[in-house]
Image (cartoon, rainbow, N blue to C red; front, side, top):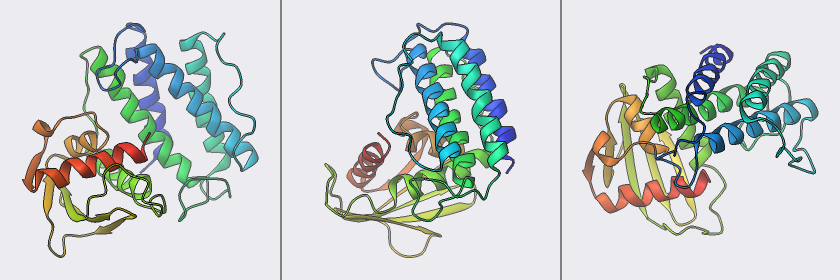
Length: 240
């Protein structure tokens, strides 16, 4: 996948829709307006420019961005992060939160999905949702399962959802089997073994459900509904 091309087009769409009204409420982010989303994404972009520049988390962070015009700042930030990713390529060592990938390639992928989900936020705010490419959606399902929810985040049992079960997700001809307990989330490709609950559907619907941008009515559910809802709770904890 050509992540930089996707980032350019998705970030442009987000900005175009945001220009139709910064004051609109964002249904998926209670208490947020489109302006909040735009400023959040701009700050994420600027943060990643600094991470790529120095190879580590910027400290102190964040600077005072309060006086910046939201849309002007967003446009500058989206161009800056594309330029920084292009300059870094995909093999520059840098800080990431993925224990399996400490290269700039991680940020190529992550910035695309950061942008797609928040593009959906501003589109939902203006009732102007456009399609998500199935290739992006499948890649996004893979990314939200690992490293966002899978990974070394749970060893202390710091969760409000200590479900002990296996859940399977299926979309676009692919499957993921996820074993969850109070101290771990283990993600495996494929559909082997018993699952207490299954989630399926169109790739975009499953992707948006995982990120809390679509309800259960958008997907197909089978098995224990409590396992499904607890798993969604774990994702919410991991993606805050």
